[in-house]
Structure formats: C-alpha cells, structure tokens
Image (tube, rainbow, N blue to C red; front, side, top):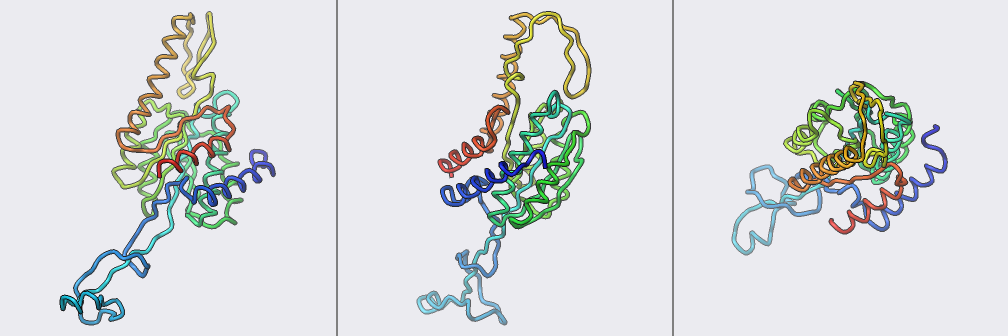
Length: 292
C-alpha cells in the first residue's frame, strides 16, 4: 500500500505503545459505556424479588436495618469508535494532501483503538455517505482498515456533514465516539451535523485540517479561481487588501469552529497538513493527558 508503507506501520506501533504506557488510552477519551450486569463496580441497590440470586444480597444492610436488598453492579462495554472522513472535492483539491493526511490520522487513531480492543467503523462521506467499513475489533484487523482507507477515492462534490451524521446514527448499533476528519468547508454549515450526533448521545471529536496555502494564500494580480467544491469559476483581481480580507474571513471561520466546540464542550483539534501526522497524534495525547 503506497499510503501506508512499512515505515508508517512502525510509527503506528510506536504511537500505540505511547498511548497505552504513558497516557493509558486517554487519547480516545475512553469513556466506555457502562451497563448493569455482572461487573465488579457497585452501582446501586434494588428490592429483593422471589427468585433473585441470593449471592447478591447485601447482608450488611440486612443485619443493620433488616432491609432485604440486592446489590447491582456495572460492567463496561467496549468503546465504539466511528470515523467520519470527508472525501469531498475540497479534500482532494490540488495534490490531494488533505485527504491523504486525514487517512493517515484515521489509520493511527484506529490502530490505537483496535490495540485497546475497542470497535472501529469508518464512514466516508461527501454530500452523502459513500463507503462504510462495518464495526471491526482486534489489532489483527488493522490491515483491513488500512486497505479500506487506501482504496478511498474522492466522491461527490460538496460536503454535507448533516447527511453523513444522519446516516451514521441510523446505522450505528449504539452510540460511541465519533471522530470527524474534514476541512469543514460545508456550505450548509457543519453545526447541524454535530448537533445531530450530540442529540443522539454520540461524542463528537472534530479534527479540522487545512493546508498552509488555504490559510495564507499569496496570489496577486488577475487570476481565475475555481471553487473546490462546486467547480464554479470566477475571475478576480487579487490585491493586498483582498488578501487581508480573505485571511480575516478564514480566521473567523476557524474561530467559529472553536466557539461552537467550546459551547458544547466538544474536543476540537486543528492542524495544517504540513505537520507530520504522528506529531499531531502526540499533541492530542498530551492534551488528553492534561484534560482527562
């Protein structure tokens, strides 16, 4: 696989070891689903009913107060980690570096999750979900994950996170962590998609990525620009003043993402594609180690 060579795999194993030994899995916010069952963590009491297992009677309560109560315990279910990867035209515009970067980051996080025995599923989307890797579990499944990511192709023109989020919540067997990898150039707004995930009790984590040239273009003079999503063409005369206006608008766009995520206490990571993917993962680990 051209995107995931042997050197890449070595870096994955290193990141997985760091996550387990140093940060103890906190990178993926390991808030596993807890349900009542046969675990060892005490949850609460309930009244005894004929036929209940006497082994769970709380004899201390009975001895002190005469109440016949049963102990109930919690057990943990493995975490479900869903990836929403934007494969719209803007992610593959030019050299396609944003889509390649998103796939490498997804591969690294998926490997860490699989090594920790969590379940992983991947949804590729543009204006709708285009490809789905069903839930899989176990470190030995990483090759199937890498093949899926390697074979992802740009599909569709526009980004519609809401449509992708709706599809995910309808297909997912239960809620979990949702990692959104996208430039978020969503003409209909990214908020509706993240709102959908929040309302359905999923836990979104946003990884917004862009190129350095998108944040700080240097074009000047008469040029013809093509909309990365719609393909529309427009002839413009670019001046220093217009470049400043563009940079201000781009900064406002990034700040709007940060503001939304802060408002709803969502994790948000922003990066440019010139930052090596493993450095990004290590940075996320350091943040997780401080905040969890």
